[in-house]
Image 1 (cartoon, rainbow, N blue to C red):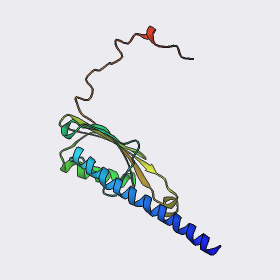
Image 2: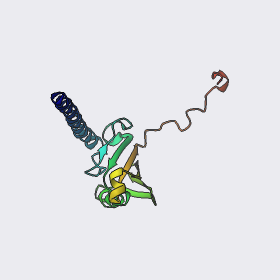
Image 3: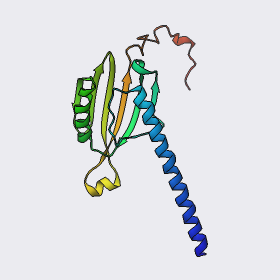
Image 4: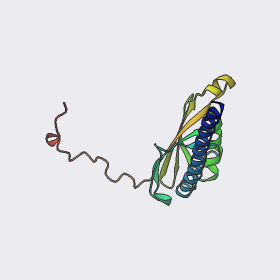
Length: 163
C-alpha cells in the first residue's frame, strides 16, 4: 500500500512538473513573438501572458491585437513601470484614468495602445496584504479599421427572426 501511494505521488509530481516546463516554454516563445511584433511597447518582466484571450494580427508597424497578462506587481507599481518605460520608447500618454483600476492610452506613429490594469486578488495576497495585477493591452494600427460603419448597407429585412 505504501508503495502504491508513493508511486501515485511520483506520477502526480511528474505531471505537474511537465506542465510547468510546457508553460515556461510557452511563455518564452510567446514573449519572443510579442517582442518581435511589439518591440517598442514595454512589458513588465514578471508578467505572464495568458494564452487564450491573447490575439495579435499583423507585423511591425501594422500590428493590432490584444495581450492579456498577469503580474505579481500591484496596479500602482505597474502604473509607475508604464509611466517611466513608455517614454523611453517614444510612446506619448494621451489619456489616463487612475483609481483602483488604471487605464492608460498611449499613441505612437498613429498607433494607439490602451493599457488597462486591474487588481488581481489572490489567497496569498490576502494574507500578505498585497495583490498582483491583471493587465489588458490593446494595440490598434490606424489602418486596422477601413470602413467606419460596416453595417450601413445591411438589409435588416433579410436577417432571420430571433426566437
